[in-house]
Image (cartoon, rainbow, N blue to C red):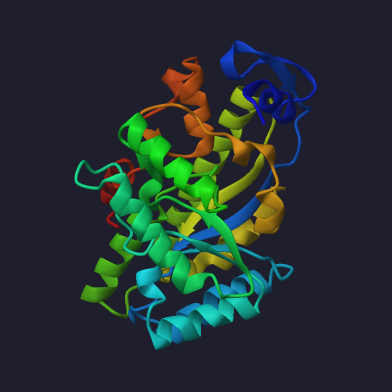
Length: 314
């Protein structure tokens, strides 16, 4: 799909400025749709919940919301053991997408990481998870960093295309991992600590970022895309993923399966910016050069949220 075809695919309705200044459509205000995509698969932690309890809690939250099917982007160092494989099989048996998040979770934008090293890490993960029945050739870059130079960016894109992979982009980026750091620190000091305030901060943060990226999608593309929200495999989501799903439903957002979300044509986009990465909505906005007043870099980071948590004593 070329850029002109892509612009036609993503916009319908009344006129607005879109990619490359092309006039594309603005749809009527529609109820957003969102799928859960979960990164890392860091199961080997036992704070408050055992690894088995954590796995069951996350899977049950999805099951209890219409048997919702997520995409699990596995950092395969976490699946390269008997226990990791056992827990991952539970996701596969439940019908969730199993996808590649590299083996070692290296940050590709580091000047120390070459394209050759990075693609070898992708291939190593592929060897571990490709036999799972619900494996799909979707790759998500660790930290959503897709290259600090055009040469590195293009080399990995070529590798992915050669091996039949698509980019498993995030549309709604967030920093749930930063909240998890604070939650874990509190529980390490006081295992019986009340976690209610962390729940509230988490839900407010995820809602704020969801509104931001949905609004940005409408401004840049003229419509609300089928969203993929980034959450992480951690205690925070073992405790509160069900609450997050309830929140979306109560706000009128439709929960959809990850398989359905990734059919949206926005996931075929390949913005040519450097450094490359962040939410695909952020990257497309950056590529136009028209929305810099709405963008920060990085799109999400612990620094943005830590000051807020400090004020709340979290």
